[in-house]
Length: 336
Image (cartoon, rainbow, N blue to C red; front, side, top):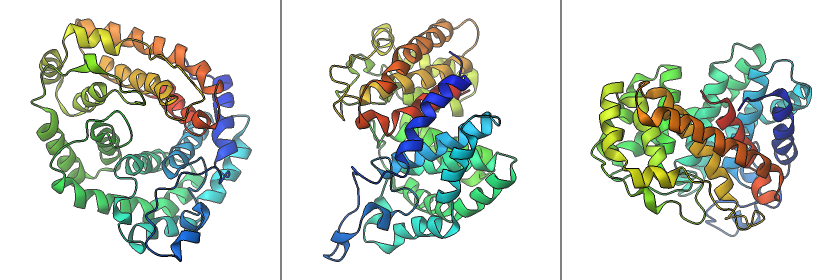
């Protein structure tokens, strides 16, 4: 399924609408005093206050950057640029960075899902040879540096991975972090991530993916692990690992399209996102496998089925999906 200008234009409408929409809003701020109780989302996060929650605003910004970068003659380029220019002001990004040290327990804020999307956003800007993008990247740097500092401090202390199908999933975050480290040349961080990935998952066998998904999953825990391991293992080692990781019952189950009983429910709609994340994991895994491996073509075809099924649903619900699903669709469609 191709990421056409027409599809991009329809998807872009979602973050263009919500990036400056402050309410409704689900903050994750821990209130330490009565004075903090009156702080609005925009007070706490002057750049990433919209789109219902901080991480959705971050990946909404990433999505608009990706569209501008990949489609330089895009019809909505001026509108997108104006919104991004407002967000990527140096003072706003400095305040976003300061948040993590200004407030008590804030160092745990958005660990590690939101952290991963910040690095994804930074990578998109860092690898774009565009004068305006270079300014945005420079202004984002204090926040990127703060996330990197927190992650490097946390990773050695993370004894166990989170194998959930929602935000705290460790394999997803580490995949994005490895991509960032390689794109920016941070060899030390890459080494830490690779070693911890092997510590967490290298011995995994016969994963019970036949039990997936939970009722509000937007990640397949097993596919996120496989998508991480294909990044860090040589092909022969990855083939051996994945052959022992999945059995036929699990493969059959993760290939099923999720049933969406109520697309207007803010939790059930997560299952639409599950199709997009399954698609991008399957595409990545398929590309990493040799031509003769039975999962190569199966995952490639199944990924397209997931995309074709989920894309119309991005436009079928309410704000529960509108504030985030479009960015997942763009990543799945444009991910290589």
